[in-house]
Image 1 (tube, rainbow, N blue to C red):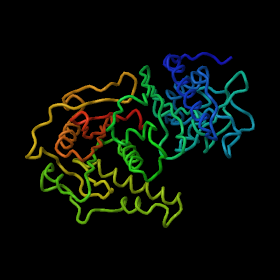
Image 2: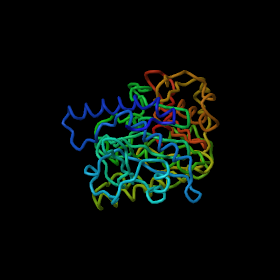
Image 3: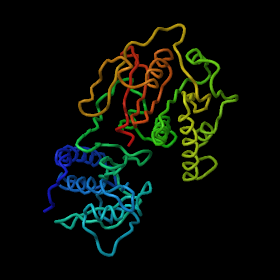
Length: 380
């Protein structure tokens, strides 16, 4: 009985998203996992995407909606905020509610009465594999679900921007030496905790992307100075001794403070570090998260030539790896990062563009070349 969507992308993508959730929920059930969300049918997915899309194009008191919608019955929502009378799911209702539920971690709860979808209130708690649609900006929707262990960023399933559709391919662009941050974002690792290396880098990447100025982080091995051969001296802002705010916090998780306090402190340190990436030049940290320098200019190491090619991929459908010249995938930051990894093969580089693109560079021993993975579809 649910009305068909007018937003054509919703019609196209709904069956694929339904199949994704069906597969993951079936696997989780087979493993005996608890607290699992209901399976979202394609017609429900289509209707929620349609309402979310048209809401995203409206404004309430001059502001575009930034909301998160979860398909969940109230009884699975922990301690839900319940409306006395449910409201119909439509763009007008979502736009009117948006100012009160736009903070992170708040979800508008949507369920059905057997015939129609309705908004029953809001919640801070959702079950595993709950179907969620985030309205990030006008015309931009992100379909995601909570990770099975509930730690870190949600796992993205699809990104819709106007008539453009990107379906995340969990097995795409993944090789034996793919960077851990990519595997974690695709939810292909085992238990994922807040102080895991990959999760720290994910939080750093999200914060870098959020300031919108672009930036680069170069992560080098601790107790080595070889990376200095690939940096132009004098370094813009070199630190002596290295700043260890984030490093100390990661190393002593849970020892001196509650988990909530620790995570709050971690976010402040991550945002502090990410803010420095807005300064022209690269921010350099070691693999223990000690800040070594920022505003650094990189150059070709004396012992190596210029990089001529790299493997470039995006973990979405039709995102197969291509061998390209580094200049083909971005501007000066991308070329500099690719050259740095070509020279310093034990390092990693995170590069954010002003337009929101985000790329991770690392060395692939299997391919014997630099590999670049574009991951902004996973960070939204």
